Length: 175
Image (cartoon, rainbow, N blue to C red; front, side, top):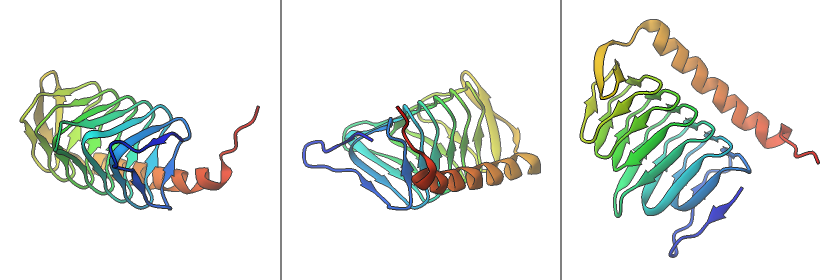
């Protein structure tokens, strides 16, 4: 996996996390325990800082970035779906779900357990309240999350935590 130091800032990755060899991690990026970062993902900690909490997964082809001297703070057990964009500064509290292809803009806050539906765009300076589903462009909270949605996230996060461990020993490049 390409890891890049940028102006003296180096990625810090817990040894229990899995970073796919085709992911790119630049600069001030801090990845907690039991995380999964998929192929094609780019984590740009060149201008700002990216913090990824324990047990979170950043799925394939996602991009995370933050403006100069700011933080994109991703909590624990967060699921960021395939091809999502998260642009800091922003805060994603624990157990948040960002659907496939969704966009989180600057200065947004996603409170604990909130969901941003696939393909949705959350404009700058917006908040999704805890345990709410937001969708659309611009995304708006439309209802509370259901027990089924909460269980889906718990199962999905555990699957990716397991996948991270399995990939550390079971993923082998073949010619």
